[in-house]
Length: 230
Ligand SMILES: [Zn+2]
Image (tube, rainbow, N blue to C red; front, side, top):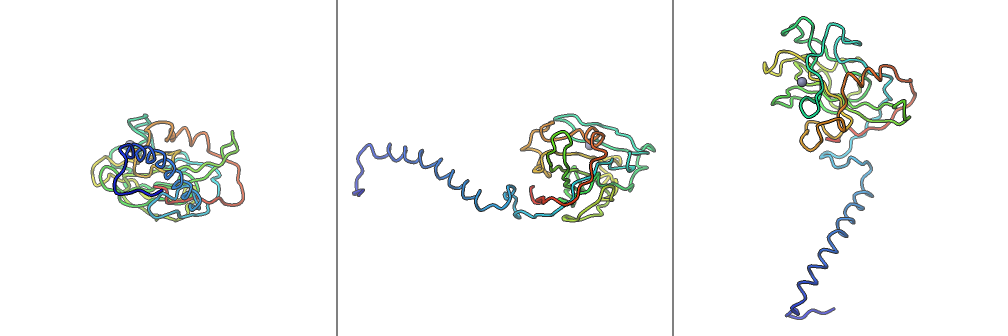
């Protein structure tokens, strides 16, 4: 087709229609292109995928007073849309638990470790893979430890069940010392809660999950997980 210097009066309508038709087409092409190019479905992360092979967890323990939270109590529980984890305190009260060890609840890899400032402070996230008994399916989940006084691991480090990841803190004096602990079904949340529903679709009730998965069958081999999904 040859277009001269002037367009017939109906042309803009046609072009508008063409744009509507091309829009989804281009979008689909982009998505398909990404699908082909991406070696991993979480390639949207800024740094690209970072694949680490980890063993399947052989069970989960409590993050304080390992393995059964002995000497600690839950001072505040999970409440959808309000408190997306559990607060754990030493039975001694006050800051008697300041500096106590915090443990990874299961084997996995550290997917985040650093001072997130604000209301969080020093934070560690460990990514786990485990096989759900009822379905036989392997799931990737995150455990989240925050308000830490010290962090004793770094991103990319493999950790074992019960291995220390940090110590209980006050987040620079903002709180009485306690561990705020979360478990996420959704491994894209990281520190960004806003885009994700603040309920059971994305979060476990931590103690319920741990109690239901204390002992899992030991399996050989490892599974690849991407630790750049935030
Ligand atoms: Zn809390």
